[in-house]
Structure formats: structure tokens, C-alpha cells
Length: 191
Ligand SMILES: *[C@@H]1O[C@H](CO)[C@@H](O)[C@H](O)[C@H]1NC(C)=O
Ligand SMILES: *[C@@H]1O[C@H](CO)[C@@H](O)[C@H](O)[C@H]1NC(C)=O
Ligand SMILES: *[C@@H]1O[C@H](CO)[C@@H](O)[C@H](O)[C@H]1NC(C)=O
Ligand SMILES: *[C@@H]1O[C@H](CO)[C@@H](O)[C@H](O)[C@H]1NC(C)=O
View 1: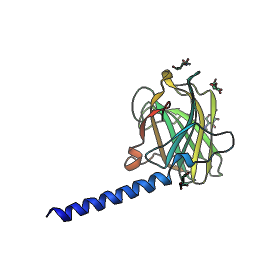
View 2: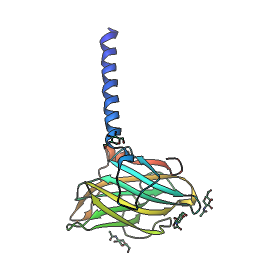
View 3: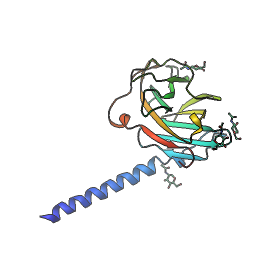
View 4: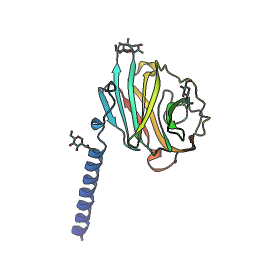
């Protein structure tokens, strides 16, 4: 009986298409709004964690002004970074935004030594010519920063994450599902 199976596949395909269409609309990075003076030339909706990357690339000095936004509860943290040597978490230079119980948002910059990093606030493996800042609004953090692209390459291996914090202290993120899929070869020239 080929027909019932065929119909089931068509239904599945139609449902998947609908879900994909609604997902893309709901998370279209081009719709994101920013405070005055924070506009970007390009953006990408990232595939997981309700995240998007917004940036302006300056070829003359090899820097990217960027905003990373990801959804989170007020008691959570989000992070974004570049891994200049490898793919994935260990070795990545990352920006992590979180807030203390009073709602003061701060940004930590750290090189992740392993999958159990020390999260020591320090310098990254590339220049950060403008100190990062972050805000929490509308159920999402936004990290603003400027980075000198490692090696002046316009394609970089990037990572991002979101996880819980307890009393403002960053706790490990889940290691399955969407949190396992948050890596991307990011093209800062074309998006
Ligand atoms: C995003 O913008 C498009 C067109 O500008 C609009 O059709 C769509 O409804 C918007 N999506 C959201 C979630 O606001
Ligand atoms: C980076 O590359 C661009 C384009 O290839 C070049 O014009 C620029 O001088 C380079 N910048 C640095 C800092 O090396
Ligand atoms: C890089 O060049 C852009 C465009 O000319 C400029 O706005 C920006 O301030 C420069 N960044 C640094 C860190 O020099
Ligand atoms: C990390 O250090 C910078 C520079 O000293 C500081 O502005 C920032 O608040 C620190 N981040 C955290 C989470 O303590």
C-alpha cells in the first residue's frame, strides 16, 4: 500500500514547512531593534537558542563591530565567541553576559581552557579595541563588542551558549539538544 505512506510523508513535509516558515518569521534577525547608534549592516539568525548576530565589518582595519543577542531568563547567562584554532568550546575566546541578583549586567571575557573552564575574567586571544557592554531587555541579553578578526580572516569558527546562573554565578549549560548545536563557521563578509 503505497498511498497511505505517501500521504503521511506529504503531511509531514507540509507540517515541517509550516514550522520552518513560522520559526524563520518569528526569529528574523532583520526585525530586531537596537538602541540609537547601535545599528548594524548585516545580521544572521543563528540556528539555535533564540540567538542572532548583528555586525558591521570594517575591511580597512579588520575589525567587526557586533551585537550578539540571545533569549534567556533574567537568572541566566549567554555567551558568544570565536575559536581561532579549532572548532567548538575548548580554546574559544568568549564574551559572557550575566546579571547579579539586583539586575546589574556585566560581561566576562575569558579563554575557555576546557569543557570545565575556570571562567577567569581576562584578555582574549584577539584584540577587543572597544570594551564590551551588555544589556538585558525583553527576555534577551545583548552583548555589544568590537573584535579584531583573528588573522584578519573574514571567516571564523564561532560558538554561542546560554545557561543558568545561581545568585549571579554562572553554572554549566546543558550538554544536549540545542546547546550541542551552537557552533557556526561565520562569514563576516557575506553573512
Ligand atoms: C518581521 O518583519 C517582516 C517584514 O518586515 C514581517 O512580515 C514579520 O511579521 C516580522 N516578524 C516579527 C516576528 O515581527
Ligand atoms: C585586513 O584585510 C583587509 C582586506 O584584505 C586589508 O585591506 C587590511 O589592510 C587588513 N588589515 C589588517 C589590520 O591587517
Ligand atoms: C576601524 O575602522 C572603522 C571604519 O573606518 C572605524 O569606524 C573604527 O573606529 C575603526 N576601529 C578601530 C578599532 O580602529
Ligand atoms: C571583567 O573585567 C572587566 C574589566 O576589568 C570589567 O569591566 C568587567 O565588569 C568584569 N566582568 C565581570 C563579570 O566581573
